[in-house]
Image 1 (cartoon, helix red, strand yellow):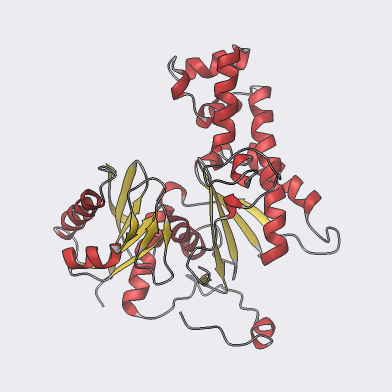
Image 2 (cartoon, helix red, strand yellow; image 1 turned 60 degrees about the horizontal axis):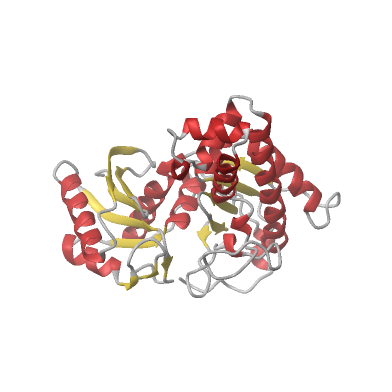
Length: 345
């Protein structure tokens, strides 16, 4: 049987990462481009050009797109994107008309969560919660081997859970959202304040950013923490504390076996994960009388979105549901038999 290759395209506000992915989740060709503009037409042109480029050398069966925005439950329309001019954009049908290939569109975090369940950190699990820590916080849920999208397709927006009443203002319009305390924006905010105040750490951060306050980012904090700076390590640990508190709240709602931490901030590794585990244990409802979920770092890094999008599109095109590679999914038969049949998606 011929190998079924799919194109995965991960579209963010500043970059497009794309690749040809085989049925084992291996990327066999890859390219990266800047997101062309805030024009939906130009983004569509870029997607079409990427597909044409890959099809010159590979027999492609489907295209999967991970979009940074709200995607409806039919996996066809980007209802809203904070970084692109997508407003009720029928992206699936537009790409199909250009390419003639089956197309699936999903939220980029859902695509990453699926990839980690299929090929990454959660291959042994029936359920997972993915937390992506970047400028904000995104997330995804896989429950009994299916991405859970919610009734309207918008599940997993964990970053906008309120954790501090009347706290820091958030771009979403509310105050005290979790991502204002446990994301890269926290480190960036503190780093730029330290530069403005002229602290010792601030001077180091400014030097690392090439002398520009506007260029100072949370990643510079991680770099300096990795060199042993105690204050930078403490900042990351505080983000980890807030991360653990939020994870405990999600555990109370979904009780997964594993939380997978991805996104750029996860590059801090154990400096972030260990404080998160400790705060999770202290905050978990029923602590001491229940099993605790594992908290681990994602395995697939920045490739997760394109791998997951490609894999989901291949599965949709074949109209069958896969098992984890190796058949290692632990299905809770007793739980299944005690609840009503799941609604077909």
